[in-house]
Amino acid sequence: MAQVFGVHCGACQFIPIMVSDGTKTVLATIGGVALLREACKLLLMFLRARQRQTQCPASLRDRLYPEHGLGDHIMDVDGFREAGRKMVEWIADYRASCHTRSVLPTVQPGFLSDRLPAFAPAVGAPWETIFRDFEEQILPGITHWESPHFFSYFKPHASFPSVLGEFLCAGLNVIGFSWIASPACTELEMVVCDWFAKMLRLPEDFLCRGNGLGGGVIQGTAGESAIVALLAAVAEQRQKPGFSIEKAVVYGSDQAHSILDKACLVVGIPSHHLRKISTNFKQGYALQPDALEKAIVEDEAAGLQPLFLFVTVGTTSTTASDVLPPLTAVAQKKGLWVHLDAAYGGAYAICPEFRNGLFDGMENVDSVVVNAHKKLMANFDVSLLWTRRRRALLQALSLEAEKNEYLRNANSDKGIVIDYKDWQLPLGRRFRSLKLWFVLRSFGAEGLREHIRNGVRLAATFSSWVKEDDRFEVCCPSQFALVCIRLRAGDEASERLKDACNNSGKIHFVSTKVEGQTVLRIAIGGLEMSERDIAFAWKVLQEEATRVLV
Image 1 (cartoon, rainbow, N blue to C red):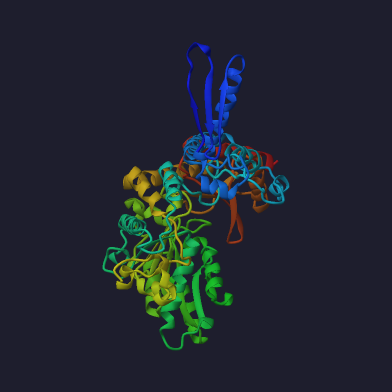
Image 2 (image 1 turned 90 degrees about the vertical axis):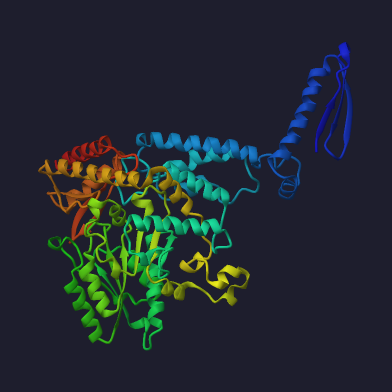
């Protein structure tokens, strides 16, 4: 350890100085005009040595960078504290000024490969250099999802408490695959899953602390949840004689998300055994029970085995919702597993005025997913999956204890705890429940409800403006906070309008196809979005429409 010792010798201004780095000691007597210069040199030598010791444990520094001075940049606790403060300030400034940025970047494919070296750096760099490179090299290629002028897809609503929860999750660095791996990680997840289940008024079968039949688990996405649910359905059917995955059939509407296609691909359901049943405008793009039953009967007659029904509350293209009771009645009669994809629309069910009809019939649903990162103020990724058939899930995803000997512990062997590794595809898992706990503690259930209501109000306002312009039409009922519009001039004009708006960088939205027609999706309700922002978007749409329709 480097040390400096000095003694002031009265008025003579001579200072004996001893410098030690732990291996050798130098004694110097300095006086006259050289005093200040040499003292500064020795002090700088001491400070550099001290900095190296505080920046990183000596053993780590010496192991990584045995050459003197090469490890000076490695971040220590104090460096992390300072960089962390600056990072929070940067994020706060970014969020506050995001509305001033072009929503879409203007870069071309391959831009970053051209800017960055072909090989990883041989040695590290100071944090200031790294972050400057982020701002100069990487940030120009960012699509600004946090902009209040971003109306594409269904954007995550990343509240600040959620972001801080994510930060803390990374800092704690917990991998909660089993209860004993971090009891708080498992039990907080059980608590927040039950909190949300009760806000949604799910039956007791779906509670972790309910009757023991089911429970909730945090997945990364609705796509992962669909795969897990389909695996559970297959595992349950495998217990029955004569079941064959090659004969299994899966059902959904033509509005069902493509995650259903991917789930079938992963699980091994033949692609020609996925039935996407047609819907139309008159039916509200909802799956009809008579069409479902007809498809099932035809498949049974062909010697196939109906397995799984995928129903939706809040489809991606139009936010259409399937009516559950008649569909679940058909599924129950035919023995199908029913999975409800409420990734977007489910959050609205926490509001009494929007809940009517959405979750009716849940007693006959086997699994349901709600993306908390879509409307419930959490940053990506956090999907809440509940099932009332825990046993089937464990049959699909848990391994025999003997095959995971190193993971065994007394509480798991007794079956008195939940090990979430057996409720998901990976083994490891993050402490995602922290950010949900932060959100609920910060906003409360009423705060979340008001946020959802505000999005619906903004969507209704935007829809009313569109209806006043004869060049446009609202082409689908606006049930939640998505407004689907198009130009009456047709598909080509609507596509050109989309391209013109997006290329301007002022706003960003995407299109979809509904019954073969181009529809422009304006997804409203982001965390920072206000009436001023939707007015800005409508002004851009009108101005670009004038140019397109010339």
